[in-house]
Length: 106
Image: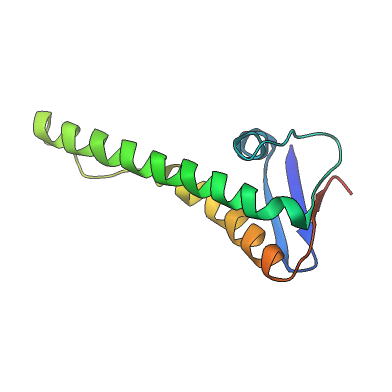
């Protein structure tokens, strides 16, 4: 199922419900039928999501370094959390700048 996040401050962001649930969990929210991320919650949500992305990038870098020592891999890697989370993170940042809420399920 697709979840659409809406805010007057940014274009809509659509993602699969599994990813939406994971990202919302990282920032301390639950994916319900409807929900809101109030503008006052955005600074904390952004900080938590940035921390998770940074930790994922470090873990992936360690993994890739280890993998290259032990194999002659093809060098292909997936984008990980950062690639999947950046559209949502950009929406959070734009909403914070404009003191706007983010809604879903409406």
